[in-house]
Amino acid sequence: MSDPGHENLPDSPPPAGPPAETTGAEPAGGHPHWFDDEAGPVVRPYAMTRGRTRHAAQHRLDLIALVVAEPAADDPVWDLTLSPEHAHILELCRERPQSVAELAAELDLAIGVVRVLIGDLVDDALVHVNRPVPPAELPDESILREVIDGLRAL
Figure 1 (cartoon, rainbow, N blue to C red):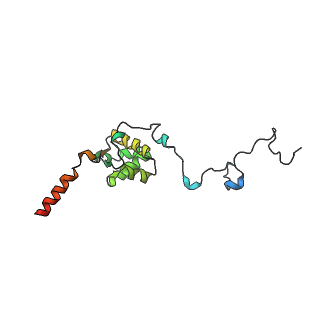
Figure 2: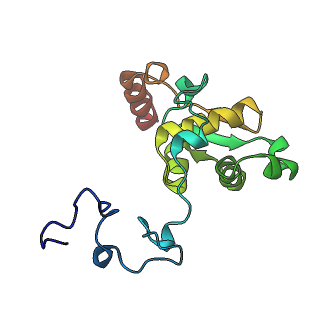
Figure 3: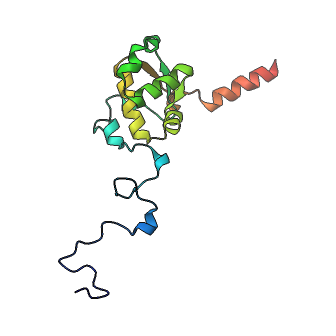
C-alpha cells in the first residue's frame, strides 16, 4: 500500500540524485551525467603533480620568471615519456620563452600546479628559468636621473 506523499518509506530506496528533468537525458548506462560532454576528462590537479604542492626550485619561480626550453628538449623521445601537461609546457616554451603566468593561463591550471610541473622539467634539464632582476639590484632612480641629465647636456 502506497501513501501519497510518503514515497521514501523504509522498504523503498531513496532517489539517487536530482530528478531526471533537471539533469537532461540519461546516457545508455542509465546514470545521469554530472558534467557536459564538452568538458572532457576530469583530472584533479593533485593527480598531475602526484600529490605534491611544492617543488624544490619553486622559490625561483616568480610569476614573471621566463621559462626557456633547453636544446635537449628538441629530442622527440621526451614527448613520448612526459605527461600531457609537461609536454604542453615544453611545446609552448619551444616556440618562445614563456612566463610562469602565461603558461598557467595557456594551460588553464593553477599557478601552484604549473610551478610544480615546471620544477619537474627543470630537474630533467629540459627547461631553465630566467628570474627577473630583484628590485634591490636595479639601478637607483637618482643615478638614472643623473644619466638622463648628462645626456641632455650633450
